[in-house]
Amino acid sequence: MANHTSTNNLSDKFKYWQRRTIIATMIGYALYYFVRKNLSMAIPGMQEDLGIGKADLGIFLTLHGLIYGVSKFVNGIIGDRVNARHFMVLGLLLSALCNVVFGFSSAVMVLGITWVLNGWFQGMGFPPCARLMTHWVPPQELATKMSVWNTSHSIGAGLVVIVCGYVVSHMTWRWAFFIPSLIAILGAIYLWIMLRDTPSSVGLPELHEDKSQEEKKERKKISRIQSVPS
Image 1 (cartoon, one colour):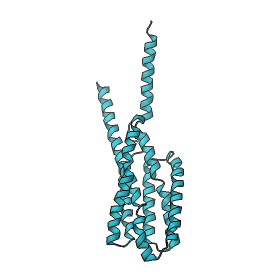
Image 2: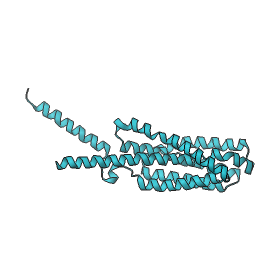
Image 3: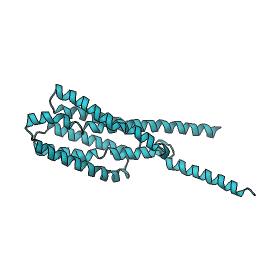
């Protein structure tokens, strides 16, 4: 009876942390969009205020996209080997810092370099989310829960248009970088509080440990059946 109660308590605790991790990573990844997709809302104001041409914007937007793609690949490798909580928080903070620098800048070269760097830090968002999901969600549930998690893309992209659209229409284009940066910093603090890297970090068995235990039980059952004389 005590073992059954203990198992139920562990199961409830695991489900709590699983829900907490999914919700936190959804919010965290949506906030990455706040410090990436905000540029498109600020471009008209930047062109009018700074006289930046479409060619200049096109160059560093293209470089941003290329660096972002390379970053997701490289940081995917790094993300498998480091603490996912630390990695995701660091990436969001560095992206927020790039946005602050971008908001204060006026020189095309500085703007370009800053946004390209932001592209690299943006690539630190998805790898830790993927790692956390595989640690907290069993393989047989992963496809369904990842489908739910993937709504974070649409949520982030939609909210940043609403927030930055309002900001640009009532303030200068620079605030389209300052306000999302503040939101991202608050989001990084939230992620630090809410996330844990693996089940073992909160005293729970790892998913692969549960699986190996089940396999041991199955092997014992088979052994008992085979030992019964025919």
